[in-house]
Image (cartoon, rainbow, N blue to C red):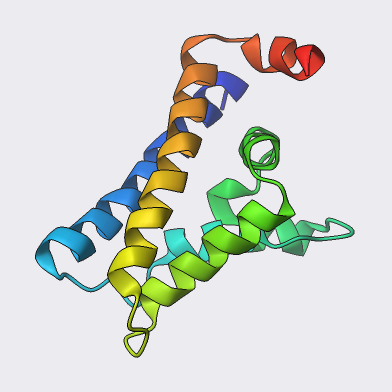
Length: 133
């Protein structure tokens, strides 16, 4: 798979998670219990000191360079923890703030999707942006 298309895959995967959160907010539709995409995404947000093949496989399609770079570029460790907390709250039926958590997660995920689409539409721009910072 070309690196450029990995950004499109990231955007589409994030959109799938966002769509399930929108369904939860608008239609009170619970998130699927066996949501591998969400599990892989949560694994990609976990801070690590080293990366192994098993770690990357636990991240599924989020375990490639382009996905991890985009996630790490947008989210510092505090933002990652916040997003993980929000997504776990939505998955917990006993949490009273599930709707608010879902709305905040949608907002954060929207930024990730937008960045991934930008990199897909403008090949090579991710390296220019990294040097500009």
